[in-house]
Image (cartoon, rainbow, N blue to C red; front, side, top):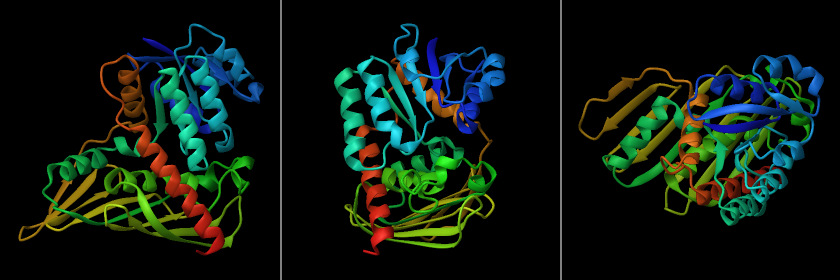
Length: 318
């Protein structure tokens, strides 16, 4: 079993530890890092995490095989590079970086050091998304023509953190919170983005924002696409792929609708899973050499390149 450190034991970091600790046969958290250690000490004691306030304490610990980062976005790149230099595998929560150059630096650093790089995109492990991938890979939809994605939730208002109100850490309304998951999904199916036009409309500022982001894409493969995210409405998820011979639509966590030319639409539901557990099982399996990690570095970079362009378009109106 591989030993891991949780760096950033806040709301999301605690969710990760809870999903994995005592349940996984591949990964065990033994250390935690927090800039406010006293606020998380009871949690770390409950889960038997040795707590400190410095990343260097983890990097110098030879017993640690992997570092999981749930830290402010602007810190990711330098922290990933430091982990790689220390010979530690690293799993970084989304977004990997705030610009394509830093994403490339992170991917290159891990490749040079020969360590695994994972990225927090747990929505890929929802049953509907796994089945959507299977349908897409089967080829029954035909040539991909258009992709649509929408992810909205109320997490920003419910789980407020002061750093998340800073436009330099969380630009373009819901892009870093929910929109990045949609962007990752669209890029994973349609490939790199050639051009885009983004719009952000805001009616009420943080900490309980009323705002929307929508983006129109042209992908290098020739397909078009749209993305939308709202930070104040109840949970909603939809990824819809349109091909020359039909479409497939993932809804929520476990529903899929397949529509093929000349056939009655098929609506399928699947048992629910813990997507956080599933994504760390994939990371652990790749860490142990049992399988290849399912997200390639090129995809991570392409997603952040599109992310950077969305931020630029939304701010400049171009």
